[in-house]
Amino acid sequence: MADFTYDVKDFKSSTEVRWCPGCGDHAILNAIQRTMADLGKKKSDYAVISGIGCSSRLPYYMNTYGFHTIHGRASAIASGVKSANPKLHVWQITGDGDALAIGGNHFIHMVRRNVDINVILFNNKIYGLTKGQYSPTTDRGFKTKSSPFGTVEDPFVPGQLVLGSRGTFFARSIDGNMKMSQEIFTEAAKHEGTSVVEVLQNCVIFNSGIHEQITKAENREDHQLYLKHGEKMIFGVNRDKGIVSEKGKLKAVTIGQDGYTIDDVLVHDAEDEESYLHSALINMALPNFPVAFGVIRSVKAPVYDQEMESQIKDVQARRKVTCVDELLRSGNTWEV
Image (cartoon, one colour):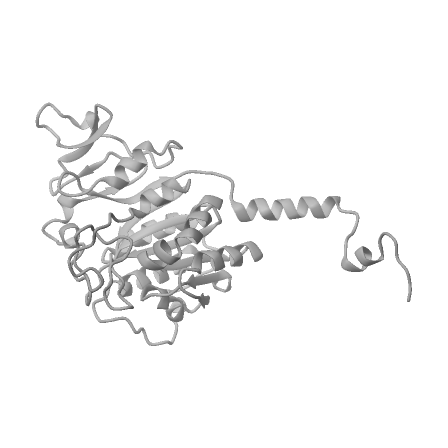
């Protein structure tokens, strides 16, 4: 039973939401507010931290404590907030540019340290606030205002960056699927350590339809695999397709064809400490595979802020000097 009872309206601020009509950010905001209302945590213990970008306006629209910081520094400041006051429930709101370009160094070290922060990473594969330049997740060859002849770079895969940083939690959702997002945000909030949720988000002005192949109604069932721990990896309109392992690699098959049965379909284990399968699921892409959504990885590991707090208490219990006055009066002293 929840310790505190709230309604979604309790988390809505009076500030006018200034995103473009139809922007995917609206749905993500709503999902976050609904999740917080359902978690039953004390509202005054929430802190929402952001950097710079369209997504980073979100703290203004939350009736919680928050901090709209500077470009790329949300991870550093969120880490400081959590370390200074571990009782706070810290949520970091960031975009693919803010987190993975200028903020990339802060991001990977926060994940490596496993600070207990919930990171919601909006990924629209473009710089929206600065009017349509390519970002670290823009696909190779894509034409933008800063790559008029097409990008000549391969993009980051956010989930792979998390795994490479020894991340303990990674999940993926879609802006328009609020039910999925709420379920995932709830699991992220329960996880002890850095939880990173990549949300595929649509920028209606500068990159509209970038996730259309995955999200359109006619494609959705065949192009999305919603993973749940302990359940078979099944997808498709008729729920007759699955993911199997063959010669050490994943393969999408139709159950009942070519000799494949339901018994061949893999069961998702988000809690496997080995990240090999999680990495393969993160990499799945159209047209040969559906895109994986849900909690892909969730494992236990020491948590930075908890370890730091424990270390401080241990040192305090053993110290001989208990205050600054005692420190100043210790050793050799003299009067002038």
